[in-house]
Structure formats: C-alpha cells, structure tokens
Image (cartoon, rainbow, N blue to C red; front, side, top):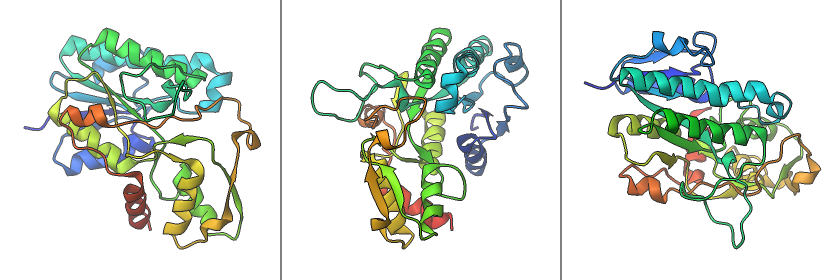
Length: 286
C-alpha cells in the first residue's frame, strides 16, 4: 500500500500541484493550506500526522524581498515551523521531506563557477536564505532521517506570477523586456519537481540533503529568451541587463545552479535538462 502523503502549504505553487499529482499516482493525500494548518503553531502538527505518513513541507515564507523587512515572520515560518513538523514526525513515526532553496548558497567561487552539490559550503546572502538554511538544520536536528530537498527557480509556465509565466505574458505583447543576464541558476518545472518528490517519498533515499532541479545552469536572460522562442515570439525583444539595473532589497546569489550528481548516486531518476522541461511546460499550459 502506498503511503499517505501529507502536504503543508497546499495553496502554493508546489503544494497545489503535488496534491493532484500524488493523488493521480494512487497515494492517499491530505493537503492543507496555510490557513488550515499554521505550521508555526507547535501543537497543530499533532492533529494532522499519523504513523507511516510522508509529510512534504511546502509551506514557507518565500517572498525574498519582504523577508528583509520581516525577519521575525520569515524565521517563524522557515525555521520554527519546519522544526515543529519534524518534532511531530519524530514522535509519531512519520517521514518528512522538507523543501529548501538554492538561496542557501552565496554564488561566489574562488575558481570557475560550477553547479552546487549538497556537500558544498553554504553561505546565504539574504534573510530568506539564512532562514531557509536554519530551517534545514532545525529539521535535521529534530529528525535526522528527514530529507531536505533543495530546489530552484520553480515555475509552472501557465498564467501566474512565476518567472516563466510572466515572460510568457510579456511575449504576448509588443514590449521589449530587459532581463538580468548575470544571475545564473536552475529553472525547475513544477511537474518535474513534484514527480521527484513523490519518488523520494516512495523510495526513501539515504542522503539527508538532495538537490532536486532540472539540469543545466542558465541565466534569467537566456531562460526568458527561450520562453519567447518557444511561444513563437521574437527572442531579440529580450535585452540583457545587469542586476544593478533592477535593484532589489534582498541580494541574490549571482550563481546558484544546483547539480544532480549526488541525486543520481542515491538511485533516483535524474531530472531532465531545463530546456526540455520548459518546452513541455509551455506546451501543456496552453
């Protein structure tokens, strides 16, 4: 019998997709929005988790810039909340997959940049990144058998606020779009991420930290041009600019691509190249 998958933050991008996907694969699913399950309440988890469950924590304070001005709230949701879930899982005998981020890395290298593996040193630049890293440590401290799944630049490609969706909407206009060319990461299609999360839930790999992202580093600029080309718009309408052209409250790592070498070594199915995933995402979101 397939384990029940319990999802926090089910109203968000990953949680909502995961709820439907896991159910289609025959898993019993219990999905809770942040309004239904406030993970910052230490007692709340006890009402939702049973022995044998696999909890996937999709709840997070994900507004990178807002976290700079609301560090206490970011800490509550990104650190205290996941620790509450981990402690509850430990008490009842449930597993936990906790979603984290590429922003735990600095993006600064002594030599040539290369995709990060889980063994690489962290060095977050922002409140968001620091709280997400602290959340990882809190989870593994309370539940050493938990899996931390770091991902990056998640998108649906449909109509929404994620980067690919916004670029798709821009492509439907006549606008010229300036996009930063000096931020490099791993665009990850939500469908591929959720397939990986379910596989992790079913297999239960040994490593405590995994990088779960579509393969191949790329810049925001190149990702935007790929979106334009795939929907039949002129990619020359996307112009490269530096990060300094769009100043933001929170610093971003200049390079935060995630490598999948250790993920494959764990016996899990490697995620496909980002270009293939993007093409499918845009074609299925029509």
